[in-house]
Length: 219
Figure 1: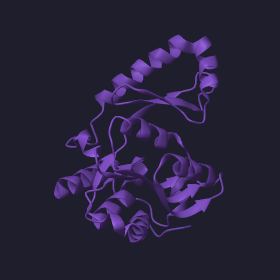
Figure 2 (figure 1 turned 180 degrees about the horizontal axis):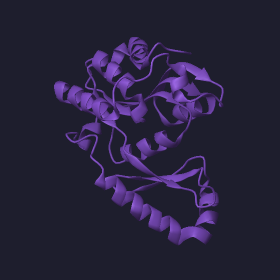
Figure 3 (figure 1 turned 135 degrees about the vertical axis):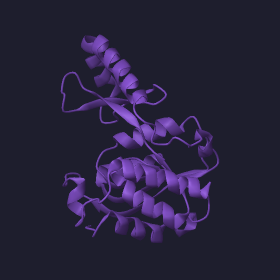
Figure 4 (figure 1 turned 45 degrees about the vertical axis):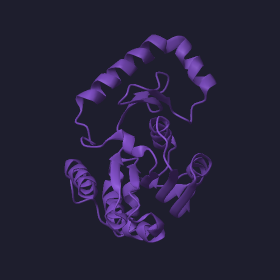
C-alpha cells in the first residue's frame, strides 16, 4: 500500500485502533524514521511515545549483516535472524572483537542524547504497549523492544504497523497479544520512503522534540 505521507498512515491506523484511545497506552516506536506516523497516531489516541534507542554491532564475518544490538542498559540482544549456534560459531574466532565492539557500542550509545529524557520506564507496567513502525521488514527492532519490556509487566503488547512483510508479521503474531496492519507485503520489497509520495518535512531532532512534547502533554 502507498500513502501520501507518513501522517496519513498514522491517521489511517488510528481509525483501526480506537479501542486504545484515552487508555494511557504507550506507543513504542521501533524506528526513528517512523516518528511522524507515530506522532500522528499518538495525537489521535492520546497516547505516550517511547522511542527505541540501541546501537548495532556488525557481524565480524560479514560487515553488511547486523550481529546484534546493545541497549541503553548494556544488554546484548542477538539478531533473531542469527541462530544461537551460528553466534557461538562466530564467537569462537571473534570473541575478543565482539566484546570490544559491545563496549564501544555501549559507550557510544550513552554518549548520545537520550530521546526519552522524561520517560519513566516503570510506566510500561500495567499499560497497553503498541510496538509500532510505519514500514517494517526486519525482526531486529521487535526483538530489541521485547528485551527491554521483559523487565516490566505490560497489560498487553500489540504489534502495529503500516506495511509489513510476511515473515515479520509472523514474528509479531507469535510474540504479541494481537496485531493491526495496513498491508502485508512479500518478504522482498522497496526502501521505506518508496511507499510515501511526500518526504519527511522535519529533521530527526524536530521529530524527537514533537514526540517528547506529546508525551508531556498527556502526562
